[in-house]
Image 1 (cartoon, rainbow, N blue to C red):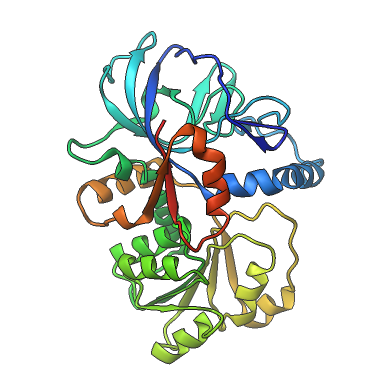
Image 2: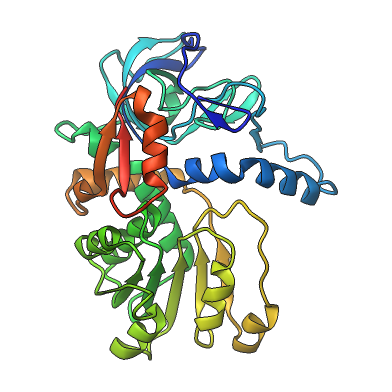
Length: 343
């Protein structure tokens, strides 16, 4: 769990399902890069957001914000087994294996599972989910792969928001799970060529398994140079999936005229860019977040039907006690892509 931006392992009270909710046992939960970013830059991001939203009226449908000084259990990429039914539950049964968008709702409003003081995330042994959000996992699909529904849905949504179509090409910068999910979604749509770039040999190899047409080490060849060599003519969409300061401006710097830039990396720090880079070339920049319910469901179907094989993503599994070490291991991308927590 996290308190005051510090990660630790501890015991918490067992959650209780309310009306329309179920208690579940976590079978597998992926560690997301946004969780790592939150621990490092969450305090800074909270301060920036508060400053920039001072003049904005409150949004009645926004998520309840967690209080950093209180316990919060992370984990929003999960697959669970129903172990207890709350009142008024009639579509799920004990023993059902489910995935869910990481959203819970009750009389108090909307809560982000894994980013809430009220609803523990998937790094816990038990979680409460809303029955209406649960999707049964198709029989025979391993729970480890089902837990990858959420990160794949991020890529599906980003590609949909890009409005990319046949006859266009793509560059994906950053080959963590989000970048890999973008490649998978692009190839399921038949888009090519797709050029992928990352410093990590491990992640470049995973990009090849996802179907990237050309994979480069930016220290040796820039992604834009590789694209110009194999294409250089088709309309281009650049997916920025790194999420660190300077990357948006770098994408703008190399983008050709009329290119579209999709910002899918979760940068939680203040950044700066030079507007004239975009003005002079009439670039289009689209920021994306999460996914629609239909995209989440289609991501699960794509995994279950074998349209996409994500088994190579899983580079490690840990128990709850080893989550802090897993966070440290993921800080260096040379070995791991996706570590699953299996409480």
